[in-house]
Length: 71
Image (cartoon, rainbow, N blue to C red):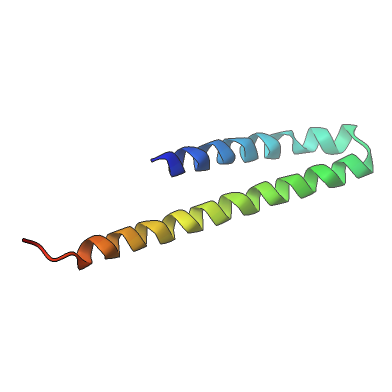
């Protein structure tokens, strides 16, 4: 459950960044805008990696529980 909390926090942060992107692009310099877009890209990639890892861990846990013989 703790893994999902981290995913939710990072997802919320990424959503806020995406919403603020038009404002940042209008008001900041080119260098700061490029840095913002790089951070946004990394945050989106991080969410994708965490989602993929969560799916793989769930599959692994499910396979492990199926391998244990019942008594």
